[in-house]
Amino acid sequence: MMISLHRKTQKQKIGIYIRIGNENQIELEKQLDNCKKFIEENFLNYEIEGIYSDLNIPATKYLFGERKELSKLLEHSKQGLIDNIIVYSKDRLSRDVKELEFIYTLTESFNTSIYEVKNKIKLNINNNEMHKKLLEESIAEFEIVHSKKKKEI
Image (cartoon, rainbow, N blue to C red; front, top):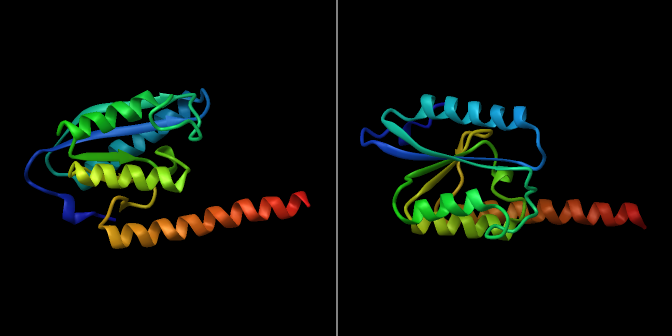
């Protein structure tokens, strides 16, 4: 699937974010390879400005705490060094809906797009679409937690 909207002729500055919650270097390399392939298929004129990787850091660790590479990527986005962030899956950014919303809103304010390779979509879309998507994710998250509690009873 081609994301033709983003095949701009102006050089796009790209940051790749990869994260793994354990020390599985092979899985980290798979994420990176998939991200690079996605970039090659969807961007005409680009420069990979950086590869930001948090190894052995679970998604439950807070954004500005132990995930130093993600914080660095967001700072580079703020400084205008990155136009596009590529992640294999949104859960590489966070598994917390509120934190995802924060990341999406923050990057939109920097005019930085986030693309998810797994579903070939732009994640930080206009606010109405973003809120609808986050609401759906919140409901799914609630259902998971609720079903776990039911099993405990």
